[in-house]
Image (cartoon, rainbow, N blue to C red; front, side):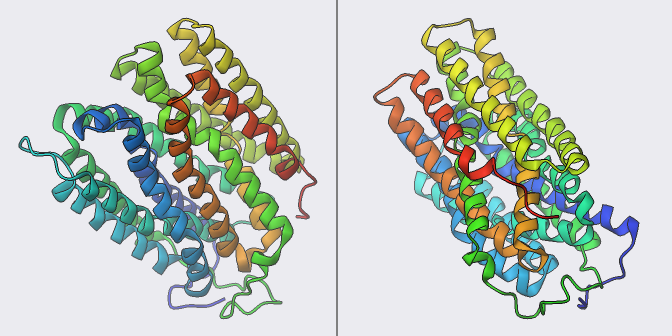
Length: 407
C-alpha cells in the first residue's frame, strides 16, 4: 500500500505510531472520561438535577456514537493520518469554543443548551480518534503482537481518565470550567501535532486479495463481527456506570470529599492500565483471548453483586471505595484483547470499519447509560444500579466468551 505519507516498514517507526495513537486516545479520553469526573461541580455550577446531569454527560457519547462508523469508513478509504488530524484539530477548536461560550465566568452561567450542543459536537469530531488510531497500530504490528499493541493503546483510555480524575476536578474547583475546557483543548492540540509527526501508512500492502482503494463492506455483513461488537458495547454499560456516576455514588452515598473521590477514580484507571498491558501480552503468548474475556466477565459480575450488597447493607465508606475500584478495574481490563480479536476477524483492510461499528455501539452505551442510571435512581437505591451492572456482565458471556478467531 502506498500513499503520499507512506514510508517503508521499520521496527522503530511502529513504536512511534503506537505512541502517537496511544497519546491521541489519551488526550480524547481526558475529554470523554475526564469531564464526568467533574460531575459534582457540573451539577452545582450549571444548576442541574441528576436527570439533567445524565443528559449533558450523555450528549458527548451520543456524538461519538453517531460519528464512529462514518469515520471508520473514511479511515479505510483515506487512511489514518488525515482522519486523525481532521478529528483532533476540530475537537481542539470545539473545546476552545466551550471554554469561551459554554463555561460559567464572571458570575454568568451560559445556557445549558450551549454546553450540551458543544459537547455533542466534540463527540462528533472526536469519534475519529478511536478507529483511525486502532487501524494505524494494527497495520504496523504483526499478528503475534497485536494483542499487546492494542492493549497498550487501550491503556490510553484509563490513562486519560486518571489524568482527568486527578486534574479536572481540581481545576473546576479552583479556576472554573473555562480552565477545564482550555486544558483539554491544549491536550488535543498536542496529540494532533504528534500524529502529524509520527503517524504514516506502511508501504507494504495490507492484503494481497483486496485493493485498499475500494474497501469492502463485508465487515458489516459478518455475524462474528456483529457478535463481538454487541458484546463489547454491552460490557461497556457497567463500565460507563462506574466512570460516569462513580463520583456521584461515593459523594452522595459515602459522603466523601473531592480529594478522596479523585484518588479513588485515578486508582481505578491506573489499575485498569496495568491489567490491559499484562492481558495483551498474556493472551498473545497463550492465544487464549476468549478465556481471558470470560474471566473478566465473571469477575466483574461477581464484584458488582458484592458492591450492590455492600451498598444495600450500608458498609463503611472504605469498603464501598474498595469494591467500586475493584469492580471498575475488572470491567475495564479487557478492551485491548477484545479489539484485537475484532480486528483479526474483520481483517486489516476492514479494521477501520469494524472498529468504527464497534465504537458506535460503545458510545450508544455511553449515551444511554447515564440516562438509565439517572432514571433508575429516581425509583430505586444505588444497590439496584450495581445489580443491573452485574446482570449486563452476565449477558455478555454468549457474545464474548467463545472460540478465538484464527490468527
